[in-house]
Length: 107
Image (cartoon, rainbow, N blue to C red; front, side, top):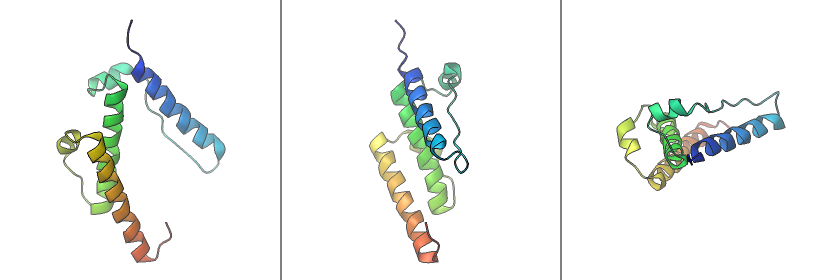
């Protein structure tokens, strides 16, 4: 029997995003993850756990750009644990929120 945890994880993430948009469709948009498993396999993602890690790396990458103004090294992020990535994301988000607070812009 083939493990379909990746398919299930993708479906859950997409369902959550779709439901969020449906709450206020005139003001919300969300991209959905592809359910093409060959795409994910080409990216080195074949399990739900690998998908979670990949998505955390993406979030850490983008939050780092927002906080510090430059892109971090992708390979270094890929080597971090999920807990390390979550701490990095939280720190980056704090930096961004503090910058906005100090600028007088409402977040």
